[in-house]
Length: 159
Image (cartoon, rainbow, N blue to C red):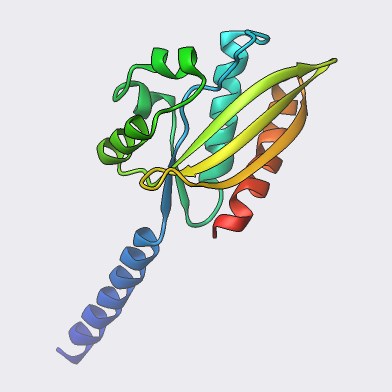
C-alpha cells in the first residue's frame, strides 16, 4: 500500500510538471508568406512557411500553427491579397486556434538570394513584439538554415 501511495505521488508530480510545461508554451500562427511582387513560386512560399513553422516549433516554449491548421480556419486569399492581416482577423485567428502570436513573413528577391522579413505580433494587442530580416540562399537548404536563424532571432526577445 505504501508503494502504491509513493507511485501515485510520483505520477501526480510528473503530470503536474507536464501540465505546467504545456501551459507555458506560447502558440504562434504562421500564415502564407507575403510576396507582393510575386518574385518566388507558390512551392517556394510553401517551403518557406514550413521551414518557419519547423524552426518555431523546435524552440522550447513555442508551438506553431502552420498552413494546414490556418487554411482550414481562414481564407488564405485575404493574406495574399492584402499583404497585411487586420487586427480583427488576427483576433479571430487567435480565438479559433488558441494562438497568442502571429508570425507575418514577407519575401523579396535580392540578386541570387531572398530577403525574408519576419514580424511577430501579439494577436490580442496588435503590438509588434519582434521584427528581423534574414537573407537566405534561394533553395531548399537555404530556406531551412535561414528560417532557423530567423526564428532564433525573432524569438529571443519574446521568451
